[in-house]
Image 1 (spheres, rainbow, N blue to C red):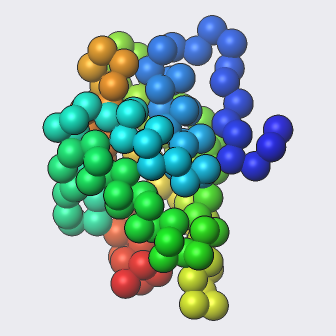
Image 2 (tube, helix red, strand yellow; image 1 turned 120 degrees about the vertical axis):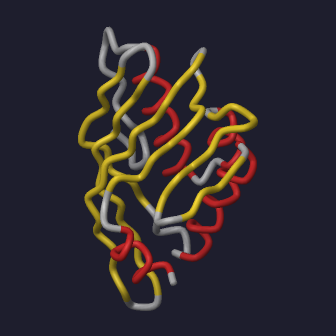
Image 3 (cartoon, one colour; image 1 turned 90 degrees about the vertical axis):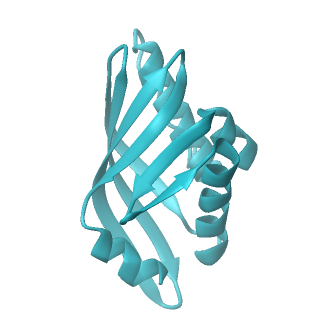
Length: 133
């Protein structure tokens, strides 16, 4: 499997596929595909702040790619999904100014009609803030 390619399990729930495709887009730095995974009014919650709108969420991902010099990679351990939610177990990795980020986190996604309406970060925001700030 090539870097950034997320394996699609056979028989996966449709929302699992949406979440896995989102991670593929994040790892490619594909802002259009990131935005396409979200409803236009989606909200991304994390680190004590929120980003509203699919384009703004894609912009955030783009900013993180740029800030890491293109080293941002998200490794999925698993995705659990049903008709309303998707849960991603992941490790976020990046390099920046001689520092390394390796952060194990959980994202909870709310989905409706095959699109993400909300994303919630569950982890220690201090790890992310210390790296990105």
